[in-house]
Length: 103
Image (cartoon, rainbow, N blue to C red; front, top):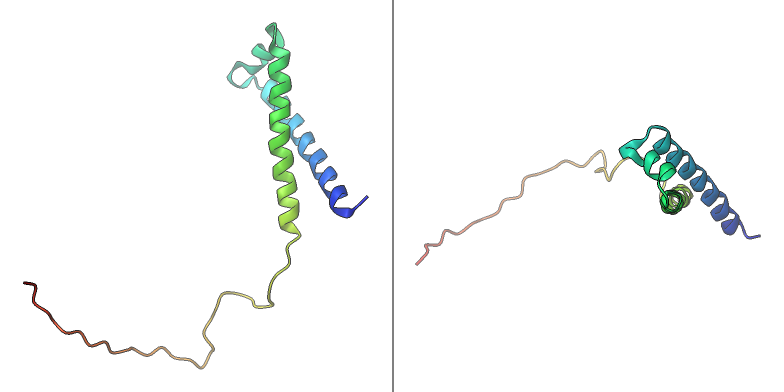
C-alpha cells in the first residue's frame, strides 16, 4: 500500500475516533437537549447517525489536513524575517513637490 494512502487511512481513523469522542461528550453533557432527542424520540437514531457521520467527515478532514501540512519542509535556511545586512543604514530620500493651485 502506498505511503500516502496509509497516511490517509490512519488519519481518517484518528479523525473518526475524535468524532466518536466528541459526539459521546455531546450526549453525556446533554448539550442543547441532544441526548433526549437522540435516545428518546422515534427517529432519534437517525439524527445520531447523521451527527456522527458529519462530525466524522469534518474531524477526519481536519486531521488529514494537519498531517499533510506538518509534512512541509522549510524553503530556506534563514531564521527570522527579511533583515537588512548589518552594515546597511537607512537614509532619507528627498522628494521635491511642486505646489499646484486647484482651478
